[in-house]
Length: 185
Image 1 (tube, rainbow, N blue to C red):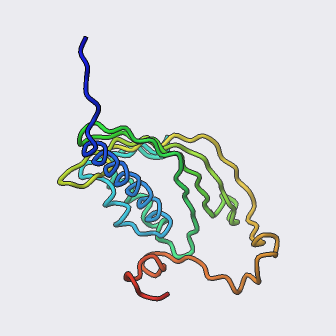
Image 2: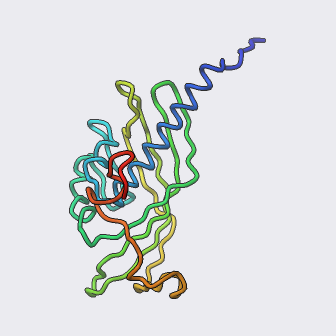
Image 3: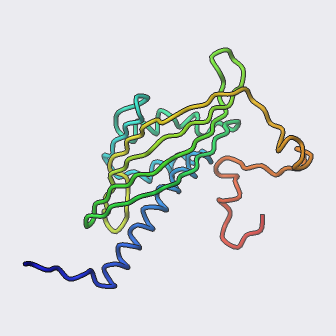
């Protein structure tokens, strides 16, 4: 009978750090999408990476980013992507990750009005560590559900505050997240 010794604490810590870096990469990508930071979104992919966006797009990651860049960076574009349930399996400098995404987008409908759309999907990512940096090698999105609705912005049915007092998020590079560390808002 062959026995294998358990991984050392150093190996376990290295795996934990790799998983943290991958998790941050996945969340950084979504922040870039929501803030319209096209180059940060592009930088999450490795050179030659591919994107399978669940029947919407299949091709190179660069072509995918090019195809959505205008919509992402539009000054009136509103979206919010929440990444959850991140599971990562490591194999040396390669990894596979599955994450769930809850995505909200404000869109112009085919009728020309503005509507809101809420989608649930999963991302299945093949990642690789190249020159000490994790990146997406291939991403496949699979849709789970969708709910479209008319635009309604009552801000907690008017209970939150006067909407004119709300400080809202902005697009790249004007959003608060792009300020220098320690710089006040």
